[in-house]
Length: 518
Image 1: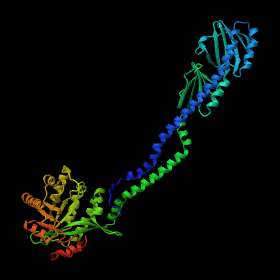
Image 2 (image 1 turned 90 degrees about the vertical axis):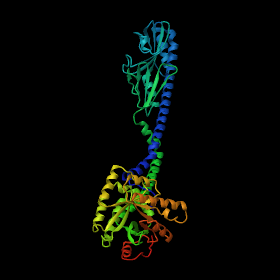
Image 3 (image 1 turned 120 degrees about the vertical axis):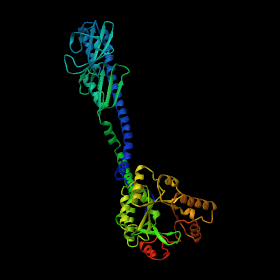
Image 4 (image 1 turned 135 degrees about the horizontal axis):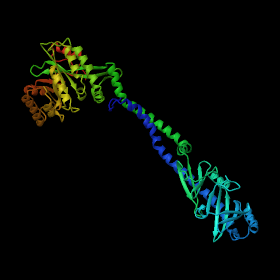
């Protein structure tokens, strides 16, 4: 029965922690997967934008050669130059038209022949490229015009927008790309805009041409990184879900094991499996039983009688020690009610801890215990254990004042072993000191321990406190303590912890009763 390690009840934590543990692999891995997906999208966008720039550069290389070939024709009559212009259009796969201008005026076109239109240098980015929405023949059909000029001579060659759109669509089939030339940009649908180029939501890149004044912007719509992470790393995500689920199950199992002892204690409390055992306390003068320290035992339905060291520390840590002590007090009151008499009051002691001092119901529990007996038939003693330090705060002081008003006696248990013993004497008004058995067991063996024991006895006399010496197991120890007029003795020499029936039988006139197991 796993009762030896600590557990503190926290229902919300027990419910949420396994889910949190299950989610940790995903929570940790998901940002990494998104980062990898983002890097992959950036690389893809950069690669496609670079390929698009290279394709457009190849197109422009062709139209640039065409423009350079006809540049010397600029200034000649259009009737003589038109045929060479049309020949250049047929030679270049991406050349839509070739035009000549002289002194800033377009005068001859491979499409229209003689023509008259001014050529504005500021329309051309870097004096070379103009992304125009169309011409007179196709007013809504985009063109990319290349300009070659030397002195008054100017040659213009145009790339059809269909080729540009194809380049944008083919390399950017799963994301968006736009071609930017100067203050205009073209999308894959053939629309030209004069606004700034768009900012893509995710994995946005810009690749500029090293030969022409143009750039290609590429990127993905919002949510693409998450979608890429889910699709590209689907198997890894599935593995993480499985591992997270296993981790959550292990965590739930561990928490269940961790809190199983407390649940078992709560079950035992509900079933009232805890029993009151009584270790006799004798008067130091006539060595007759005058009371007992009430100890708790657990009669488990399968494990039998469970030693207190197996469950008391856990009960104290979990806070169940308070209702468990309340149960034992009710049992003891019911069992001893017919054995206590006002002419021979019983000293009945219970251990209390910090948890008891934090409970406002301690006063009511003591009152209920005393009410079960005739007035003056029982002297109730609360023994402060030193496993946890009880702070002398106003709340505790009021509690002890209320207890003293009921006639409850306060004892310091295991006096001389805890760091707070003298502090308790200073902070609280106590009635009894219980000398720890470590000082009693060395009687006759260690001179220094004997001096300490004598000093404690002397101190109690000066403070007007009663003394209980616990752990008395030999006649030598008994005689030593009796000689020093110790008020009460307790130990296996006078009786081990016994049931209520055996204790009541011992009170009926026997000096001691047969020893029973712990």
